[in-house]
Length: 132
Ligand SMILES: [Cu+2]
Image 1 (spheres, helix red, strand yellow):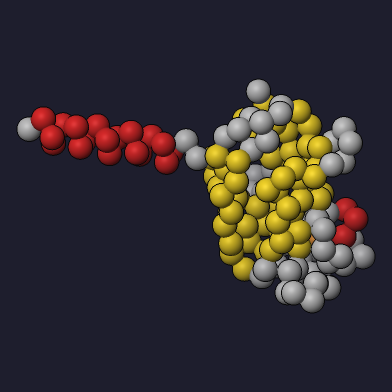
Image 2: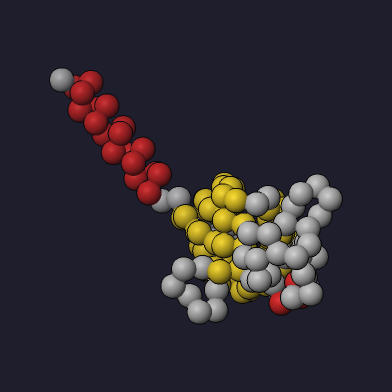
């Protein structure tokens, strides 16, 4: 009986831990834009150091890299445009998922595409905010 209660508590803790993962769904689209459902201007807000599950749907634009990557997703610190370690992603066509850890330093960041995906490539970026 004690074991059953303990097991139940463990399952509940596990469910809570899973629920705490912040899921973000992004489309990297054929018009060289990031899109997030329900947002006119897409932007991402996370809490410092939290676990993030990034679910991506990528659609090919006019051009892509030799390795088959069609868009990039690189996180830069807004103040000095330096890259955040672990957030330098390349997307293949279709759905893919990344498990990431949010930056520990609160502040303003920017996501930029690193694949020259079309003449609209320069406009492929979005704001990324890390809350304390
Ligand atoms: Cu792109």
